[in-house]
Amino acid sequence: MRTISLIQRLRNKIKIHKNNTVVIGEDTGLSGCTIIVKGSSNRLIIGNHSRLRNMTIEIVGNNCTLEIGENCVIGHGCYLSAKEENIQLSIGDDCMFSRNVNILTSDGHPIYQKAQRINPAQNIQIGNHVWLADDVTILKGVTIGNGSIVGIHSLVTKTIPDNSIAVGIPAQIVKNNIHWEI
Image (cartoon, rainbow, N blue to C red; front, side):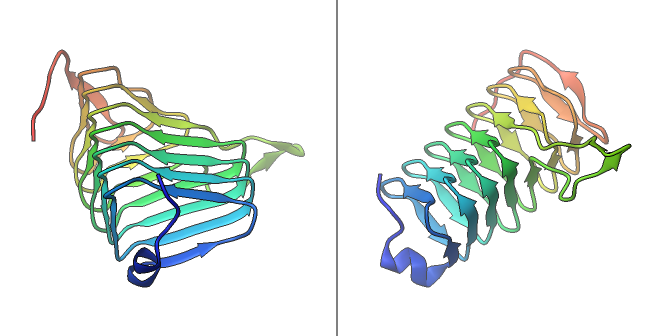
């Protein structure tokens, strides 16, 4: 693992505030990406041999971690967001995200009822060997199990077990005990 190289800085829009850590894996390709890390004590970790193209990573808050595993492919227009305090967005190894996938740990703005916050940010965990098709949105608090697939234009609001296919708005499980290959 290493920090962002000069070539990666030239090929991407990168803005990282002080007191944050960014670690990029060996033979990891970043091209046309926007990376924003604001706040303090945040961590961005991208595993070895991953390929990220024309997508955005945004970490805004304190003590947040966004981790992408090894051998992942993340396509054009994807947006990964870890916001607020002590939040984790974790993506396993060998994942494939098609175009325009959005993964959001928060609603973007706090909402209050009787002076009490009713929409705090929540962690997201995506297992190993997960395929997210075009225009999928994953909302806060979701876990997607190993080997699962989420179909095109789906909105995931609840946990999806291992080796399942989920589709729709909101996404529903339509098949279990599946496996997929590239």
